[in-house]
Length: 440
Image (cartoon, rainbow, N blue to C red; front, side, top):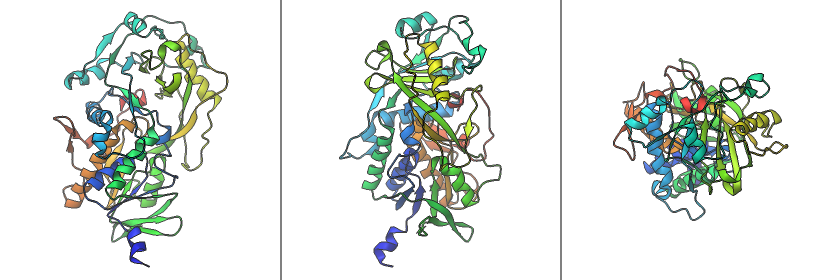
């Protein structure tokens, strides 16, 4: 084997997955001077779950650590080229500012979010039903919930009073989530990171009770003393190959979900001041999208049956009538002038989800094998923090400081604060539950 071929098969770190999380980790580890090799089964960056993401950048979570991490990353997304520290010769993403409106409901007290805003000096405004309808005339600010499936009588109950909420300005979405992953990969490649696409990992090589690399479906072995699992919906399957399932570890699983896009009412486009809405009362989220469209996603209320899959490599990406009807009818109750086309539109995709919808940023019981798992549903915005967290976990583990647990705190990049990594541990206590994407 030539030296060039051997060099192409060795690295300091192999990252499995070139979605938004794996790409951000690749950039951060390349900044640390690591020789990084990224492997992905897709044809290019972000072609799995990332490409199907709603790409929301928002701050409302019920846990302080999640608000703090999202706020820190907000400054990365709104100063993208500064974060990349690299001028991509191709197109780059744009942050589309919409602000956010959170409607009351589902038994959640408003202050479970706003008290964290107050502690971090994030400006927000309380809105009455009259305020909401004046500011966003497309919305009907009456209470219809709690969430129910449209096939039930409870869904069609009459409105039972006015609905309030709160709004804040530091929110929006990324116009092209797949492009965001490409931008990150390009910046990492500029620093020396290498990428291999259309390659499937079928084994984790181990020697002397530690990681030694990965085996590909082609039979080729890539050698590295460290492997990062950022494989998205395939992450649980990869952990099974590594033999790290167990030890009370929080486990992620692939979940099929759907998002829809339909024409928005003329008074709820981006140009008309449409906002990103988290509707806790009806169990749905929606925002204006490009060219007069409305992007709709679920917040997985308890009344909805979730579609868990065993095989992440085989699923139907076609939009279903059931999910389309459920989601669009929920939004139609909130937007009386919404026209819902008869033909289902949208895409089906896989999420990588833990029981508490909180990601795992941690080492594993296998030395040299690291976890960036369970990152779907609400973690697109946290990608820069994921990169910084995994860099800290790896450095601590290699120095012996993290032999049992990762470093408990990392310094925020833009704030005078530290981010506690304990809630992202593989051994954390699971706390449940509420609207899944919001509570985490």
